[in-house]
Every structure is written in C-alpha cells, then in structure tokens.
Length: 113
Length: 115
Image (cartoon, rainbow over all chains, first blue to last red; front, side, top):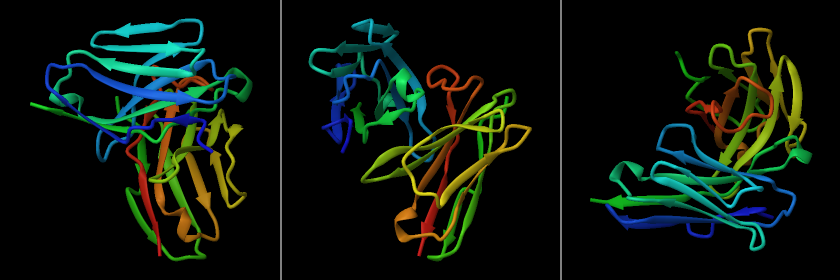
C-alpha cells in the first residue's frame, strides 16, 4: 500500500515552460516532505524540502507547495530546462517514525528543446 | 571530496546464495542508510546505521542484515537469495542520524541480479 503516490509516471514539457510534478500522501502523521532528482546510473540527489508548518518553499527555479488538507504537494520548475530531464521522487517522513523516508515511485520528466 | 562509493556496481548471483554489498560514506559522515529500489515498489528503506549501531529498520525479512564499522563504512548482507531480491541497492550517507535533506548523499548503487 503506497503511502506516497506519484500518479503520473511520466511528464513531457517544452523548454521554458512550467513543469508541475504532483505527489499525494495518505499518512496524516507525515510532517516533512522532500523532492529528489535522479539521473540514469546515478543515485538520487536532494532537491528541495518543506516542513508541514509551511505551505510553500522556494529555491531558485524550484518551488514546492504543500496542501495539508488535501494531503497533496507539488513541485514547480520554472522555467524548465533540458538539463531538468530526470526522474523526480517525492518522499515523506515523520518524527514519530524516526525520520524514515517513505518514497513515491517517481515521475520521469522530459524537457524538450 | 569523494562521494559515496558502493561496490561492486553489478553483481549476478544464484538463488540460495548469499551476497555482501559495501558502502563507503563521504569522509566525516557517520550515518549510512540502505535502500532497495525495484520498478514495482520504488525506493524502500532497509536500515540506517549511525556510529556502528542500527538506528532504524524497514520492513524487510531477517535475511537482510547490515553492519557498520568504526570507520563508518557499511556492509549489507542478503542470505538465501530469492529472485525477488533482484534490485538496485542504494546507500546514502549523512553527517547526522536521521538527516535526509542537505548533505544526504546517495551512491550510484549496486545492481544485483538473482538468477
């Protein structure tokens, strides 16, 4: 039973446009959410995170939005660049579970020139 | 500085055998976590070691075990291999225990195939 769901396995976007990657979760105890990016043949790399006390966190072209009532978060990439093409993983954790990360299955983003 | 090093990169084993994978963390990092990645289940947490002690454990059978040495290097062992153990095994290191954001660095993984 997936506690963290990324319902879109893939997404294709034109260079310069906005990419929106979505993530839903079922466990209301999650209080910390992270996005990781993974290129082929490499391990995931941390991208951005958000605590449940906030509803938005921004870092350059990357913004994460959290809607706790809907148990939904999204990652916005503006503007999208070809180098952003990768698999994006959403992950969640809670202090009560010793910060064990629960991961979504990932969304493969292709940014076309 | 050198990143997280996992050896070997690729491994083929036969059902019933056992396997040991190695992870050398970034210098100065004391926490090492292990994950299994499969297409159907995604990334699943195996365990975390900090200062040679298992700090956290996922929901895997006892065939999966690990340890950490005084130099923070970690090994994981899978005994009595099953076909379903075929996966990419990733380790991640960090300075502190339970740290999962900045500074949480993954290795490139070991691709295990069980035949």
